[in-house]
Image 1: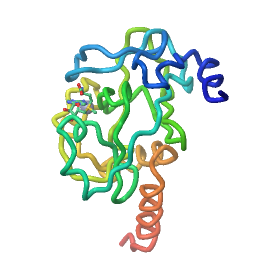
Image 2: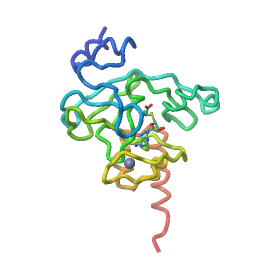
Image 3: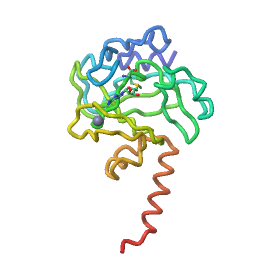
Image 4: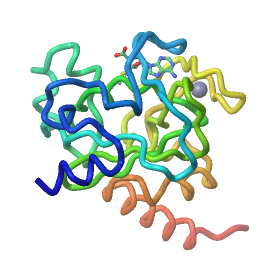
Length: 193
Ligand SMILES: C[S@@+](CC[C@H](N)C(=O)[O-])C[C@H]1O[C@@H](n2cnc3c(N)ncnc32)[C@H](O)[C@@H]1O
Ligand SMILES: [Zn+2]
């Protein structure tokens, strides 16, 4: 299995990918978070840009189907298109939001890859910025503890500063990238006086 071989190369437990366990070898683990509920923690140092985890893609659900999901499922949904969500898989579904994330995720056809967005220390909780894939108006009182914490986080990419939007844009889903381009064109057309 080519897939297993790749995963072994990055030190990830292949059993995890077969959904037998959500412990990813010696890389990350799930435990009580200081932010909220459960969280995901690094089990070794990671250098910036290093692959930290891979999780299989989850089931896709249409916006109209969300109301029929369990509370647990609703809590672990991620936006992937204008009217489509994805049920996040363990352990990535336990990653808390951070306004100063140390992980950035790449949506690949077969899996979601989490890369170190900066150097990560062994034992550090890993966090992603939920707004990278956000296109909703949900609000959350953020307890991430970062000095850049905005306090109340609105789950929408376009609430981020333009500087952060540009930084996150390559990792945002295609529909957000397209929306960014539309807004950019509109900005260019708007007279500045
Ligand atoms: C995908 S879950 C993350 C895992 C969650 N801690 C758990 O135990 O299931 C998302 C939920 O975690 C909580 N959460 C995540 N990041 C947070 C943060 N920075 N501040 C406060 N609550 C947060 C919120 O309740 C949010 O709806
Ligand atoms: Zn925050």
